[in-house]
Image (cartoon, rainbow, N blue to C red; front, side):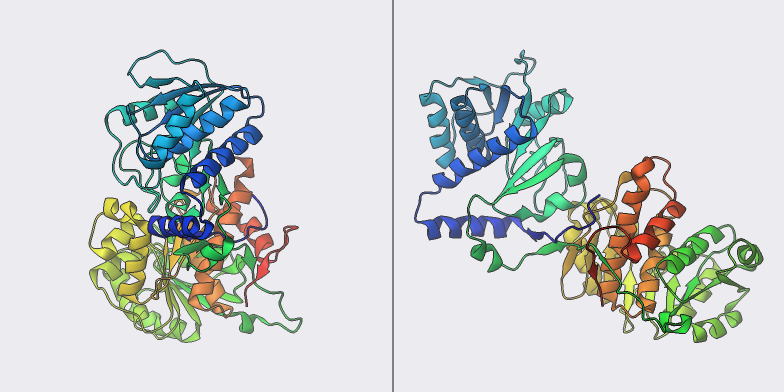
Amino acid sequence: MPSVVEPIELYTVAQVRALEREAVAASGRPSFALMQRAGAAALASLCRRWPQAHRLTVFCGPGNNGGDGFMLAALARERGLQVHVVALAAHARGDAALAREAWTQMGGAIVAWQPGQVMPEADVLVDALYGIGLDRALQGPAAEVVGFMNASTAPVLALDVPSGLDADTGHVPGDAVRADLTVTFIAHKRGMHTSHAADCVGQLELATLDVPPILASATPADARTLRAACLPPRARYANKGGNGHVLVIGGAAGMGGAAQLAGLGALRAGAGLVSLATAPAHAAMLNLVHPELMSHAVAGIADLPPLLERASVLALGPGLGHGEWSQALWMEAIDTAKPLVVDADGLNLLASSPRRFAAPVVLTPHPGEAARLLGTGVAEVEADRYAAVRELARRYAAVVVLKGAGSLVADASGRVAVCPWGNPGMATGGMGDLLTGIVAALLAQGCVPWAAACLGVGLHARAGDLAARDGERGLLPTDLLQPLRRLGNAVTGGRETHVH
């Protein structure tokens, strides 16, 4: 995991198409020149990644993505590589027709795709079937070709976007190419950084095709990835009272571990004081196991107000449950004017009693919780995570973290940040509780909700990547605590940016 990652500007498909039109108009050259540069850039990336490759099979669709493939094929043949071209259609359109003609004029053969046909051995397969315009499930021959590529032992290079992946949303409505390397053109597409893109894109490279940077800078990005960051060093006269007091409210009978993990996350992220308001059955044991956490037995609603009074930030929901005890505590806490982080059962209770927030609040739903908050299904949320997280932030007047592969952070103004870190080992119980505590601790130390959510998501995911160096499977939330401490203090050897 790199210790320093510069933010990447992410664009919608409509924005990229507009940039392409502006680039052609500004250059005064035909649009075919862009296709020529795309083929050359993709071939250069292929040769860098697989320098020993001599046999290519290029699968071309009928549109401009197929045209990029024909150009790559022609340039590869000029370099002496053996190139086998398979086409889905008998004809191509627009600039793709010019690229197809360039291939055939140099003596290149085109084979029509036939299911079950014997394919020549290839060192690299090239996916040039469909580009950024595809927003539906692949069918027929296209789906068959994708199945062939995914079953092959040869590595796959995808041009612009892996075919079958929605470049706007990251959704895969059917089958999609699982590429080892994707060379995307002109600008980064937002859908290639979240959701199912994690399984399709592989290594990602950008080829700007010499589009003037001023064109992209004049187009506000739809989203951007997070920057590696940490809090500034503490003043030498710091005291615990100046670093905030987080109160975790949760841990119904049998679920004390969730509240404990949130509390530990808050401590390792730098909160000065952390208290737990939890079921009486857990409080005494938690005090013995983790004396740093001030665990309070809360038998009923009358026990909570004194704890609320002393806290500066509330973390509401880890292991809270849905019973009468849970609902009573939720109602008492949700109406305070103190900053809140709401997660887990706190979100489920919010879904049953929706409200907009006046106090600073961060909501951290996974897709199932997001669906309940929006009154829709998980499939609808995952079909367009960008739209879902923006609607959640607008509807609840909150900063929202939509967790998952490529977690998204949004605020009510529509701003979105995308997390470029994290790994499948983090898909285990308790990881979300840890994140809740981290974000709460950052709020307690003076971060505004947007900064707390972005920094917290980044630290959590980066800590997960460090912890996963010993393997992803079997990763525990507590494995993140030591890496989290190091990252929060910039003890990484990198150049983290300080968040003030």
